[in-house]
Image (cartoon, rainbow, N blue to C red; front, side):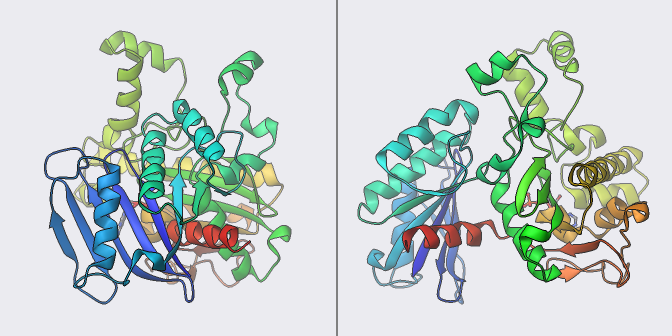
Length: 398
Ligand code: AMP
């Protein structure tokens, strides 16, 4: 069975074609600058050279059409016909309170997904466009939606409610939803296997640290709390996002900087985080280079990030009444040796003991805690595309 995994952004489409026989990626690629001058499709067939195909790509339907053409192309294609694609798995950012797991997309489901656009105005309409494009071009192929929020729907009200009037929750859905759910679910599942335990008997803290970062408490395989909230702006400071700040700062910023609601939202999402604090970059590699050369603001941004992640680890160990394993994943979590070291430093009281040699690793499944560490610490590369394909396969083989 071959599954086409699609992740649509407002002007981009990321895709993979995965052969579920051995879970291998047969082809992957990226369409960029949809609807903007300079549209380009970069297509990488397994075992062959990457091809760059430049042409006007006015919308998502045209983008998907060009991706499908690349997949069956006699030169750089990987399948003979589109009929070889058995199902399509779509990453959808918001499932609201409706979707607590992945679903096969029907007309009713698509309407519900579209109705949730207010919750994620930048991403959800792009996800809907991607689904419609695939439905149009592959009308007989089943389509599945996999939601970023679904895994966190198991959080109890004490974790997901905010201290605003209850009416606002009822009328506007204002509560914590959490994001990166596909990743937290995937890596916690791998961690349980590495612990050699049934996931039901485990307490795991998953740290998805990338350009966007979130930390989740996974108790018995279920998300019981997570650091991102109503939107992916909440939690730890990130590449360009503030993370949690005193909410009273927002009206002050609006006044002082003359920003309206949209302006302050953009400011907090795009100009802040480690970029805003350091004035250097949102990329941790640049920050580490700058800090090594004595840039104090770059060092401060890195220190703040590690401190805030550590604070969540402590909070979630308390929330679960213990922790068996801590997982690091995503761009920073998988690659940044210093960050992992600094987050774990000082957590010995909790039973966490990192092994410096084992931690000297990047991008592969590794137990990085010392042999006598009570709490295991793992580096587990995330694989959201594979997780989406696995859910799609499960739902389509029913
Ligand atoms: P992601 O959003 O998961 O793709 O993560 C992207 C981020 O990972 C980049 O912005 C970098 O900050 C970080 N990153 C990638 N490689 C490294 C590395 N070798 N060392 C430190 N940070 C890295």
